[in-house]
Image (cartoon, rainbow, N blue to C red; front, side, top):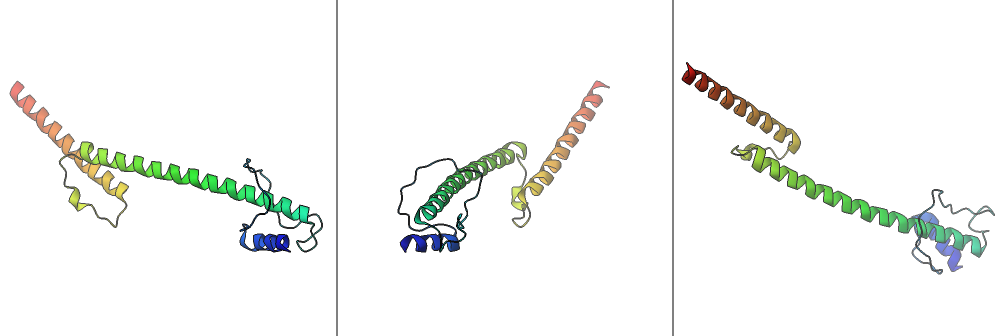
Length: 139
């Protein structure tokens, strides 16, 4: 009765809260485990069939949990890298610019790109002014 109840809970919730057989960590297979067995339904399934389905589902849950953990770690690392790049960009490329005008409601990459274009134009203007001064001195 407990096995049938656990299988029914697994069928409803997607994961089992109780397991009575130990499982070993393995790579999850590409086929999906189903709660219906070769006999047709959970109510008529044998204990071995239900345990097999339960073990397969537990293996998949463990594999998905491990994958979620890996993806979470990768996302955190990507966010840290992004923050470092933004800091470098703000301190090195946009040096001397007023960053207080950044609008928190707008996407930051667009604003930084606009500031970069402004800074680039300022650098071009300064370069042109220096070229003009150089030509004036040479004449």
